[in-house]
Structure formats: structure tokens, C-alpha cells
Image 1: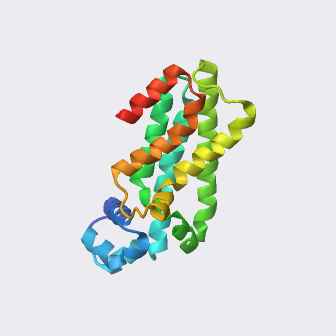
Image 2 (image 1 turned 120 degrees about the horizontal axis):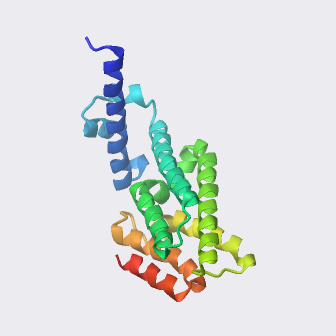
Image 3 (image 1 turned 120 degrees about the vertical axis):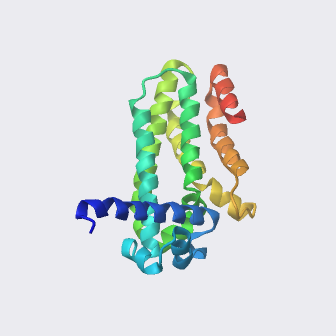
Length: 217
């Protein structure tokens, strides 16, 4: 018989498999179009086992948001620790942020419906928003000190707000305005271009070249 210490990794592994499968299904379709029976089948377990780990679909959404939040915090903290004056660091931050958005794209594509069905997401989303705006503020300050960007003081806060709005709601816009149901990598590139365009008027020539190089990749 397995001991308690032997059982824990197995339980944890099952939970991780559930979250991995759920994330893939939610990214493919909206959470309200995925059933718990589908999730259980994709993991190779029965629904009872699924409910042992996650009592409701909302619990799955919250667990996935927690994973996203953890990775977003890591990204913010890495940005805060950085003292590099290399221009590639800043375009790399945008690329890394959008890679994270892509990995958890259902959170952005279906944001309004998710908040309506899981109101407990409201405050964590606000916390992530504040953290990302702080990271962008830090990034802009470093770029200004290095001479890569020049943003008048009165325009800095609106720029920060607009960066968060566009980077959060670009997927919602594509769905509502353009009728895009299934996000693909070219849509991710479109979103990244929209955010980048907010910085472009303030960038030095060298910084614009680095940004264009990142976008072309």
C-alpha cells in the first residue's frame, strides 16, 4: 500500500494533468462550451475523480487564473529587478507578456463572460492590472534614462492605462468587431502590433528598429 508521501505526488500529478487539459480545451473553445465530462475524458479519469480535485467549473477557472497570475507576477518581478540598458530587454518584455497572454488566451478572449460567471476574479484581475502597469512604468523610466524613449509627464499615465487596455481587450475586440472566434498566432501578432503602436511615437530611432526587429520575428 502506498504511504501518504507516495500518494501526494500522484494526486498533484493528476491535478496538473486536469489543469493542462482544461487550459487546452478552454483555449480551443469558451469555458461555457466545455463540459466537465469532456475534461474528465481528456485526462483519462471519471467525473467523480475530477470533482474530487475541482468541485465546479468555476474552481477550474480560478485555478487557471491563479497559474496565470503566478506567471504574470514572475514576469513583473523580473522586470523590476532588471537594470539592463540593452534595448532588446524592453521589446523582449512585450514579447514575453504576449506569449503569456497567448498561453492563457481564453482568459482574455472570454474575459467579460468569465467575470460575470466568476465574480471572485474581479479583485485578482485588478491586482494583475496594477502589477503590469507598475512593470511598464518601471520599463518606461529605464528607457527614458537610457535615451530610448521620451514621454511627456502628462502623457505617461494615459499611456500606461492604454497599454493595459489594449493588451487585455484586444482579443475581445477581435471577437466582437471582427467576428474572430478561434484565435490564431497571427491574431496574437496583431495584438502585439496594436500595443507596440502606442509606444512608437515616443521611441528613438534605435528603439524603433529594435521593436520592428522583434515584431518581424
